[in-house]
Image (cartoon, rainbow, N blue to C red; front, side):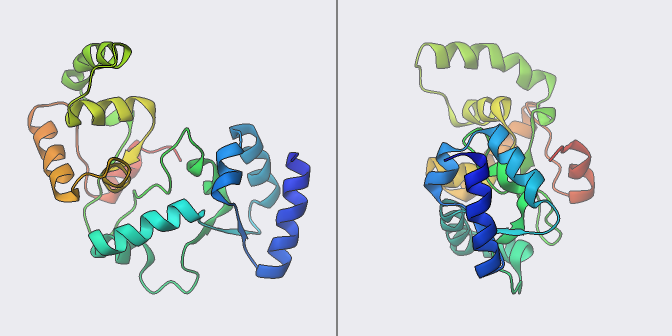
Length: 195
């Protein structure tokens, strides 16, 4: 299906449902250039409902860290509807809805800019391990993931089926080792983010 055909189909959906949504299959097939064209077309006049896979993540988050879920969605009557500008965040190159502006709970969002020199020094051995198909330790996996794309600890724990409390503790250990910087306050964190 061409981008033009996708746009026409989503225009119809927008007219009928007052929002647009992409299936997991549509997201899996979408290229970044296509998502950018779709964003450009709908920018400023359409909300997008999260893709089903991301809704499953947020259902998990509601059970596993309800305070964070409440901080994001609260009593929002347009539950799981976000700006169409976030569409590229759901492609395979990225890590989903960026949980990076929490006001009531600590943020655990990280970008490559959060890796300190001590952490960067670990990257050579981590990349060598991945090239040799050697299993990474969880802290090494965090650095490797950050090397690829920004992420938050909730998506990380969900994707790898790890206990959330253990992942948060791991972040504290990585800060102590001097591998990363953790900025839980959104005002400090937003200076590090380009979304």
